[in-house]
Image (tube, rainbow, N blue to C red; front, side):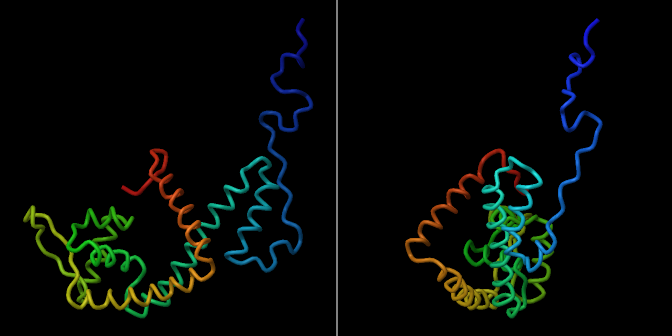
Length: 204
């Protein structure tokens, strides 16, 4: 007669036989999260995640958390210091920026270049049109299609906002030397190129 223990796919010494719950991970040490804020959460998260999930790629986790959280802080800073005083949000600036740089553009193309949905573009365009910054008109190649363009007031407002934003950008860039900045831009460019892979999910 075969040995039941030998026929079992799980060794008797296995810590987690099928159907049995995993042991709960150890909670954070008392006071371990004290003083942790939005940016210092990165170090805390990497330490805790490595303990709770042994074998994870902690440096990949750190990289993505840093990219995400620093971008979030920079975006909020630019919106609150530059764009809210002008009377628009960061998403509105993304739309206006496309029109300022590309000229009259259809909503679908604005969505592609700004990374926002067409529904968001339509809603923002309604608000910006009421503010006198954006106007609608027929597309030159198809009278049924609609393009958005900046009004004269929109052109002036964007030019002023761009100068204010670039001054703020220089303040952020002062954290790095010229050589460090060039290396940083090169490395971010590599990540951006990686983002064009078929495996990456993007907004339609």
